[in-house]
Length: 209
Ligand code: URA
View 1 (cartoon, rainbow, N blue to C red):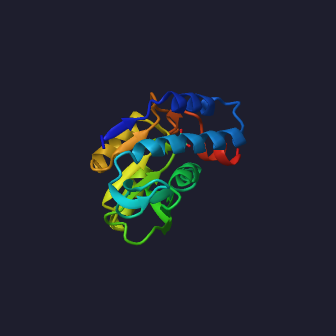
View 2: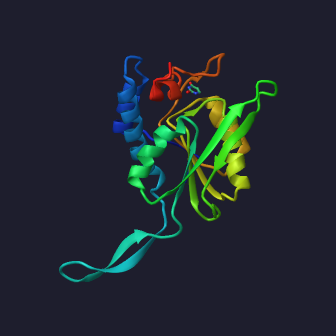
View 3: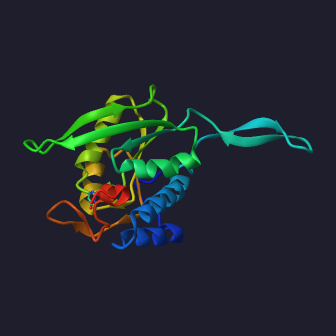
């Protein structure tokens, strides 16, 4: 897969525009994120390994294509990642699921892990980390660090919106991890928000502001 993919499908772009609008409700925002995540999952799983299996149709036997290899692992970077997780899981219901929780230490400004629970045997399993916003890249880089320490060797990072700064930081730290996003916005503002962006994805998804 390419190091950076922008999913420019018209349905994704239209839904993203609806999500950006400040008047979009919490319920609508969640629904749109779930739908976009499904469409992006379609793109990110395009190269999954396949094999054939002998089946019987009502007319005759055939060697039919089906997925090969270990089941996918999806890892939500808390809390906003959960909004993307739901959509991908609808498309790949047999995926194994993990969660990474990080907070920023106010003294060192470095991400600290407060929760980490991922499927066993990540090695050799396509592992997709999801977080809607790739902003500074600090937490995304740290999450990928933790996943690699846990054995993940075939990783992808899926987000909704990215800032150029976050893309650069991820590609510098983890050049082996392809990034899939719906858009790359202009920049980060002085508070670390992506602009024009869509605001705080977690707050908009959960109605916490
Ligand atoms: N996280 C968000 O939710 N929004 C941003 O713009 C940046 C980080």
